[in-house]
Amino acid sequence: MKFFFHAGQYFSLLYRVFSKPEKHRMYFTKIFTEIESLGINSVGIVAIISIFMGGIMTLQVAYNMENPIFPTYLVGLGNRDTLILEFSSTIMGLIMAGKIGSNITSEIGSMKVTEQIDSLEIMGVNSAAYLILPKIIAVVCIFPFLFILSVFFGLIGGLIVGPAVGAVTAADYLNGIQYLFVPYYVTYSIIKTLCFGFLIATIPAYFGYFVEGGAFEVGAASTKAVVNTNIMILVFDLILTQLLL
Image (cartoon, rainbow, N blue to C red; front, side, top):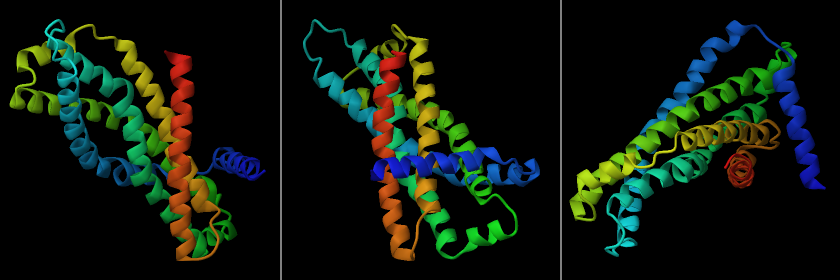
């Protein structure tokens, strides 16, 4: 029963977010502020994680293909497809849920417990739209960009680590990342990142918007938001994979 209560309240909040239009000028600056806060400031951690994971996956693929019947360029192919299909979309989404999701929940939750949201409502502002809609637009717009960066840095990580440890030559690795490339894989993963971006923006916003109490409850809401967002990302990953592949 608690699930249906939260689901109903979640969709009711989304209705408020998208139903009452405000002046577009109110959102223009705020959207770019959110893009910088939630997206641009995440580029560093995306790059670092992707470089290391690209190198690790290259080594793992190479060690599992030590049989001489397997051509070494398959190492680059395996790293490329793993990054595009799963790591740079789903795994990076799970990581960003922790960073971005907790940020959104704590920001909105703090405004809720300090009655700033009530003040917006008294002034006649649709607080749900004003606070949440720019975050949704920012995260959904920036996530495909972060996905492309993650794939790029993951491939660079494999190119650095593979030849450095002698697992694969640079020429074979570069040949592998170009071999049998399927452009639809990129389209599929970008669709997933758009969906995950929406979940990462809205679920933490829901937990922050309806938090009650003080600082302790805001912290607990942040934890719940990250856990529930990760679960929903995995559920939608399964659904979208079944539908799109």
